[in-house]
Amino acid sequence: MNKLISNIFYLKFTLTYFIFSMLLSCSDYNKILKGSDYNLKYERALEYYENNQCYKSLPLLEELMSYFRMTSKGEDVYYYYAKNQYCMGDYYLAGYYFKRFVKNFPQSQRVEECAFNSAICLMMNSPDYYLDQSESYKAIDEFQLFMSKYPNSYLIDSCNVMVSNLRNRLELKSFEKGKLYYKMEKYRSATIALNTTISEFPNTNFKEEILYLILKSNYLYASNSIDSKKIERFEETIKSYYTFVDSYKSSKFARESESFYLSSLKELEKLKI
Image (cartoon, rainbow, N blue to C red):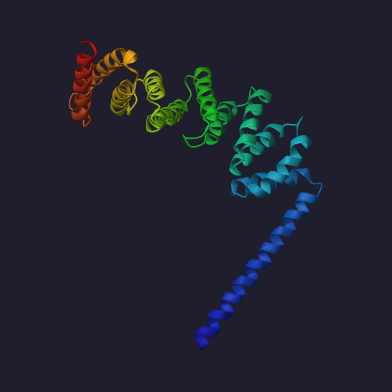
């Protein structure tokens, strides 16, 4: 019983101490924020950032941006302001300020890092593959611009990885677009979209399935065509079969693909009589 009372007392004491410390901390922060000691604000802003308290650092730096703009501390304030925006997850603003840093402080040793971070922010804004990929294209352009400008940078390998990941996202979107047309039974649109995927991503990991879907889409498109169009479209099916089988003779789709081919031959025989 005494032990239980002791534990309860300890918990109450700890909670009270924690609340008191938080209130004191908030009180100190508000004094600094509302005060006129800009050097102290600068010191605390960097200290808060280093301790991952970006929500405290950001308001201080926002005020210091104009105060220290033409001073030796101006570069530091601008840099940490961009870093804090990134820390807070506002990648649009972070990207904007990283890009502005490169323009405003071209001789800084941080220019290379900020140029890279600008591209990273675009990548962070890139949504899931099934959504609009404008930000992905922008990010790829930004990484390629970085690699062109800093060919000997230690960040080149990271850039290549990021570009590869972004291209994989674009590749998947392109492939899924073709599959969607196929599922909707828009076979002509499916073959166009799937051929575009191969054209834009010749080394795609989906190539086997893409060639199979092109073959199947061509076959179904021909089968559902009017008689005057069937010869041309079954011949196209046979061409797509040869393209498929030349690359994937042992494919899991081989048997079904061959059935499309043989069926197309039979249809052509009938049509040419």
